[in-house]
Image (cartoon, rainbow, N blue to C red):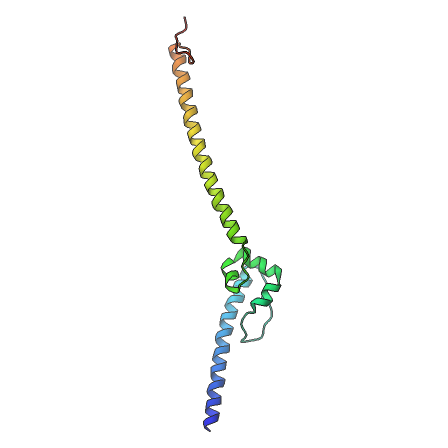
Amino acid sequence: MDSSNVLNSVIAAAYVQAAETEIAAREIEARIIATGGRPLLRQYGKPIDAEAIRQNLTLVSQLNRRDPKLATYLGVQASYQQQLELEQAQSKLLEQALSTATAELKERNNAAASNRYHYQLTGANPITAMYFI
C-alpha cells in the first residue's frame, strides 16, 4: 500500500504541474490572440513551444510589432521594435532642434522687421541710419 500512496502523490503532483502549465500557456495564448495572431496547436498541460512559434514568420512578425515584451519572453524578438523606438527618439530630437531653430529665426526676423519699421517712422535709411533729405 505504501507504493500506491507514493504513486498517487506523484500522479497528483503531475496533475497540479500540468494544470499550472496550462494556466500559463492559456495566458500566453490570450496575449497572442490579442496581437491578432493565431496560437499554435498544443497538447493540454504542455507549455507553449517557442521553436514552433519561431518557424511561423507571420506570428513572429505580429508579436514583434504588437507585443514586443511577449516576443522577448518567447525568444523570437527581432530588432524591429528597438529600431523603431530609436528612430522615434531621433525624430523627436530633430523636431525639437528644428522648432528651436525656427523660434530663433522668427525672433531675429521680428527684430529686423521692428528695426525697419522704426527707421521708416523716423525717416532714416535702415542700411546707413542716415536721415533722408
